[in-house]
Image 1 (cartoon, one colour):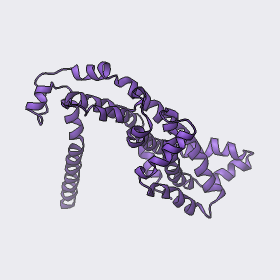
Image 2: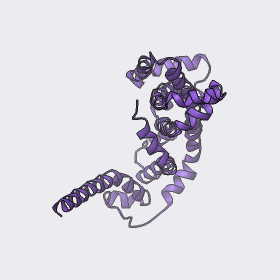
Image 3: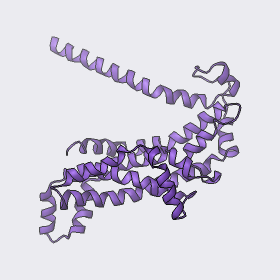
Length: 278
């Protein structure tokens, strides 16, 4: 009986700690969402209050119509989706080739790939700008996507090698005995088994591209081609900070990531646990 009570107390304490941490981590998002429905006088008088005194949708109306935020959302969405899809296709081929064709030097190759992240982003701005200027891709969303690929492909390849290496070679050998070619084995056996890991890696690649700020600020000069991160930063300019519009725009920026997490939450969990096996 004492053992049962002890387990019950430990379980209650564990759930209490998790609930507290969940509240602590979600409180800024809840405050941001509720503040986006406040008027500017209400925000200035009661900045820490949660419930709006005068509920209004003017902040969203101004962001969507006056600022033209849908265009910036479309720019970020197109660049992030194309960078993620292209990067995942190339990374799947690269990681599979490393695991299956170069198993002896796989660790060294992946370490070399992850070494690309040792360089700070600000250090590569000038070389990227010179390179894109020579190929006439400055102030171009395609050029921005190329820059994102140079970071996402090494990271995704490094992540996916762990998932492909966890797939037993005997399964692929059995498929080859049945007459499957190397490509058929890759598409019909390896990719479906590594699907949770591919989804988890794709989410990280998408979020990194979606939230990127520095290269978008430097490489894109046209106002109509700005991404959401730069557009959100532009709202801080001027003599008066438009807090209500900033909160509404921030909610719109966070919303796609939240929807993506909710839609593929189960696959994401399976992919994170599957990638732990290396």
